[in-house]
Length: 228
Image (cartoon, rainbow, N blue to C red; front, top):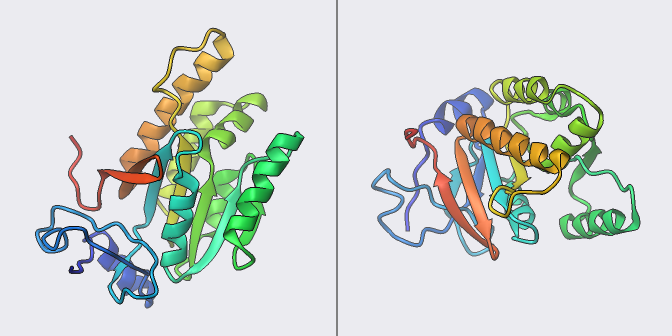
């Protein structure tokens, strides 16, 4: 096992005056020394290894893939004050039950803020060097934007601008909806198209991108990785 700090994270540590750290376990002893891999953090009491949480992390996955639990684990392992920005609204009993399940899993340590639309503004207000912010999820936020009749491209642009200037780390969760069949109705097709463009835009900004399936995270982009 070993430890290394991605280049993007080192200036942040110096600016904040406090390490943005998490416990880490490396499957391969070479992973943390050759600069080619980014060790995935898993919070454990036994581990004494630490590593910074990148400024922007995107966690993608399908329904019930374990993506939210994965994102929550990353935030919890950072050692920073956890802030949860919930984009869902309990419009029916089923969604209300999902929200209760997520709250119970997170516990009372988290500060929860419900914001279905003004995500960029809320991120600017909540992010900071002493906090780690989790947004769950981008696809529900996108749904709210579309149903409100807002300009989707403009809203995505505002979110991207905010993410590029935050003073502390944020982890964003989103559903990957573009792997199935093409929907029959125009609204659903527009949603899939917007979600695909949203994910590409955020992934280009993010330091770390993971795809979660069956509870297992797969790195798509790691800190310091060159695009292409």
